[in-house]
Image (cartoon, rainbow, N blue to C red):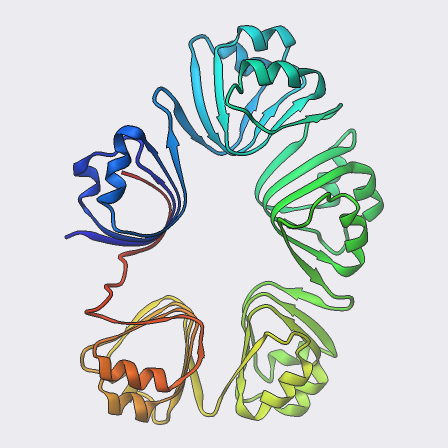
Length: 399
């Protein structure tokens, strides 16, 4: 049986063959595909919906995904010719001797940036980067690369003996107790390719260190708000630990049916959310008043709700287990079984908030479900029309 794959970050076809690709029925989306001239024709064999970037690797070159650090030790290890296409950044460290650039058999094609000591820039263009490259000179301390999630603590800053150029690919978090005077002294320049989360009072000092913020997705926590970065479920009892709190949320906030208007009003003064809020119908207007962001969805329910976050398949028995209509909130993947009829959905579902995927067995049931949509930011399809991918997300796939 052929495989249907949802999303692939990097599709590597460098060594692909007719046999290695024939087991793939479809790939919905590919961030980047790398291939050689001899394997380019295999792209047509794969049923790919969208491709963000296609990169042909010249014959005789190898492909490197990520950053490359070149120092004196690395150059000593290079004895034979090395031809590389680097999909990332290249760091030339201070200990690289000028004469080694002339003698080391390196040929580099880089799809990112090259950071180099200023006095080496001219030689690098002529020797290693004959196809051209964007070389950024630095003085004194070499820039430091960080990937993934970095929490910029006082301890992290204190390990630098001199001002540091910091480059973060991923997510940078600034804690509330970060010493901003220490930050100003230890960070000479800051680049963030991804997400930056910081407090409102830290923003002026941080912006002074960033040349361009166009590549930065900034999340600014307003003054007086406390961050909550996991799903928060509040009932009458758990709400007692809050007293006039202001909450900054990146995950759903769920309010249970036993929470009264008085208790909620006493506990929470403000909500700043980049996700959504689930609450009883009786609290909907109050939560809109407390929410400071216009794009936050408040999803109210009358009797009960079901939040589908993973992959679930529902039969008619699961619907009939409820003695009242429910609200379905789908952020994952929900499949309705063949025995689910239109009458069951009409009688057992009050509304559907669709952020993920919903698959239904018949066109008529699809129409019924569509009529119940309150939020439609996901995808609805027929089981026999668009087969659900066996794999939703794959970071790197080599065929």
